[in-house]
Image 1 (cartoon, rainbow, N blue to C red):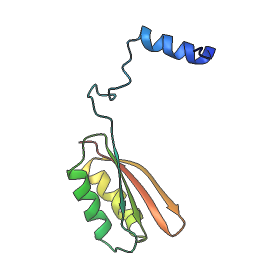
Image 2: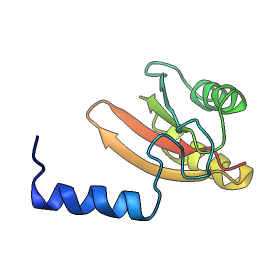
Image 3: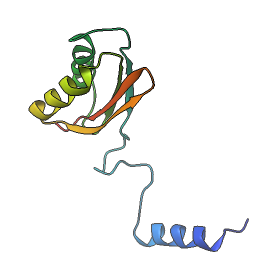
Image 4: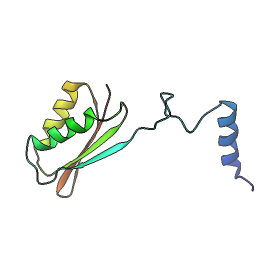
Length: 106
């Protein structure tokens, strides 16, 4: 088996720096997960309550993506995320719903 030159450089660098691809950036053995909540059709405060419940059972670094057709979620969830000191990854309108991604920070 032969590697392309660019792949060989990455493998060599990984071995030189003793990278372990089976561990998360914080050194743990678990990689962050992305949970998805489909709250389309639910109204405030439903999508936010589902987000809070999911974050309670998530690990630090995990991401939660909320799909909500309630326009208020696009402003309510980011406001709560800032107050709760988590990280807002993104807010995007995708067709008939908003996709709001939050990373658990604490």
